[in-house]
Length: 336
Image 1 (cartoon, rainbow, N blue to C red):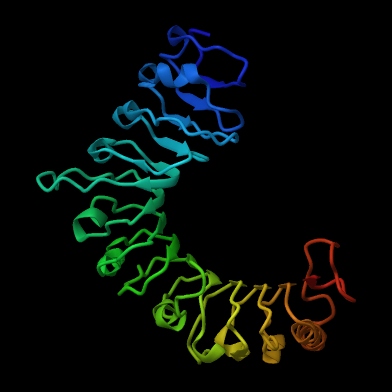
Image 2: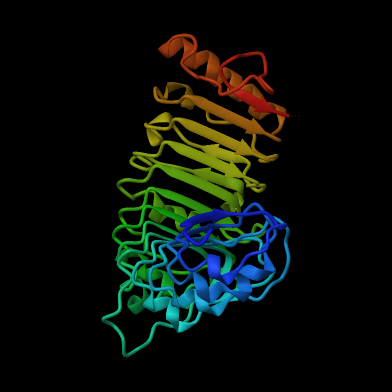
């Protein structure tokens, strides 16, 4: 054990600090955290990968020494009861690449240390009340995935996101309106309006013009007057569209030319939606329609799209992923 470089364990094992100093990979995500691990956390100073999540949710004090691990590249902490606040040492982790937490608060970037940049950081989340100042975003220039959540005021700081020229994926839990500028490199976006307070039209106007945008998921939120109307030139590269719990949406006015590259379309719990635009049958790239918890008229429109799509492009052009819940056809799924 004293020569081990990687370790996973269950709760019956007792750890010794003498056996931990050379460990590079520590993975406890399948088991309750072992008390001995946290008592001897300082011994893991050479770790590259550290996953100290727990499937048994239990509040424990997060070891502050982790933020001083010079060589750490991956840090994953899930199922911790409570928000973890990082110290200023976070900005002094030169090799950190991947940071995942249930809820993490980041410290302010030191004003007198603008030369410190986390150039290796590529994934960061979930950050609460992310202070997206110009100084902060310039310290994470190579970030590719960012997950953050706001419950308080935003102070207009999201207008600095366009500085993140490598950002490809973003998940945002929001409850208030804010000025925002998306990075032109963005490919995937998940927007979750807590409840249904945020009006999606306020933000979609900036999403539709992104040149490399491929995947959009909207959760909750609302549409003005229950209607979503798209126009020519929008969503030119979008391949995946998923609407979840968009309870206010009644009318979707769109044409196939508005989504020319769409492959997957999902509606989940859109119980007021009247129908999927029938013109979508002309989208040559369309491969899957998934309907879950919608009314019968949506199901009927999905079947009509299937039939017309077969007429245009041949039978079976729309495909299904599995047999569960198939309605009258092997080529799209309807879960009831």
